[in-house]
Image 1: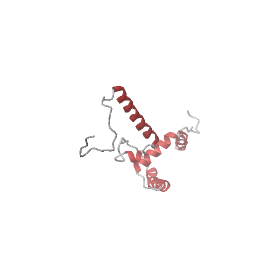
Image 2 (image 1 turned 30 degrees about the vertical axis):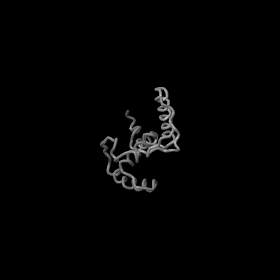
Image 3 (image 1 turned 45 degrees about the vertical axis):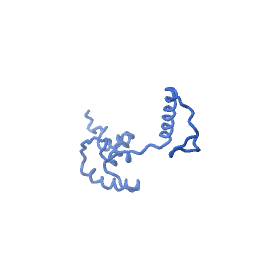
Image 4 (image 1 turned 60 degrees about the horizontal axis):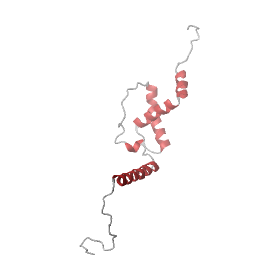
Length: 127
């Protein structure tokens, strides 16, 4: 055996001089993809909070008009929410989460709207 400065005398000799066929290469590539897919499937999804570069990323700004008494409750809502979560919460995240919870619970929203006069029949009998 002729050895050079970089040769490993204990390495097995590579006796396969033919290049891998396309079928073999495809099989290796498929196995690598499957291995990656399995690893990805077993890892938990990264939460939205950590996938983004900024709080505004992937969001559209929507104007919302609120009454003063609702605006006055906002800071208390945020403090209570931060206490419940145990960390600081962006106002944008808190308000979007509140909207999603409302969308998931239309009966609660309907109840509040009835308090505000929706589905109200006037006692005068006019219709």
